[in-house]
Image (cartoon, rainbow, N blue to C red; front, side):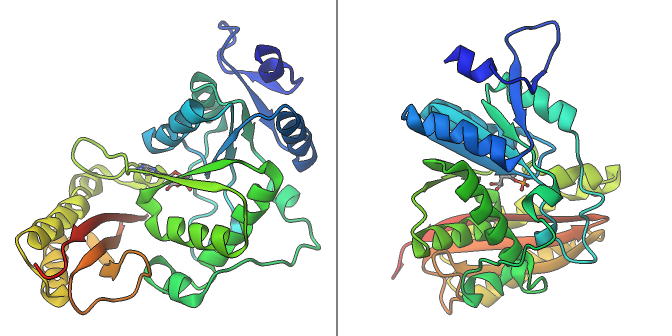
Length: 308
Ligand code: AMP
């Protein structure tokens, strides 16, 4: 097992003085497929954590769960051009492969898959995978029509290459989770989706690679997002059932931070992402804001007993 993990010529020493902390970095699809073929032949259970890199505790929580429950762990780092709009932050997106490699080694990831854009999308690439508009044209997809088609297309490619038994995703990107679950069911992708809770800073701000864009002042304002979500949760717990009233209160809370530009505040049926007339059942409360250069999202799920 150790021999298999460390056998690659492309292994990068995460810390050159410590011989044990190494992770195999694979950049080509062909090499990744060869590794997977061997693992599958040896009946290894493969866990997969797709990311865009710049690792934080949110990513590491997914990797740790994969490590705990699978024989082999692949994490991918790919800043997917298909899911960025023309005005978005693809070029500026934080990248630190050296640090990510060191963290992946510490967490005993077996392979870090880091393909270049031209490896994933050769010039003759034209295919697209997408789920229905009711999932992709709302919330984070409302003003970014191509975003979630870009996500499902790249995730399909990654799942076809890595053929994992389990894929680990964060609730922080809840709409993405729902869309990937829909795709996996609809297209009979034989992979279990494991969803893990949002990891937060001590003041409640959800960990995100994009938090590094925040100035000191913006960082001070950012916890208002989670406070606004907690306000919604509190209102639901004391019996608020009118979505309009709740959303107004949440928006008002966010607007107490003048730096915050609210993109949306929404309460949805958590299974279908449909609007609700009455707050009952499993409710997703979701927020997207712009804060300086960062676009930040967060959400909570609340189970509201029907008829209460
Ligand atoms: P990203 O690199 O931002 O595309 O995220 C890669 C994976 O990490 C996705 O499944 C995200 O939902 C998950 N993730 C991002 N932030 C967090 C967080 N704060 N807590 C838990 N999971 C997260």
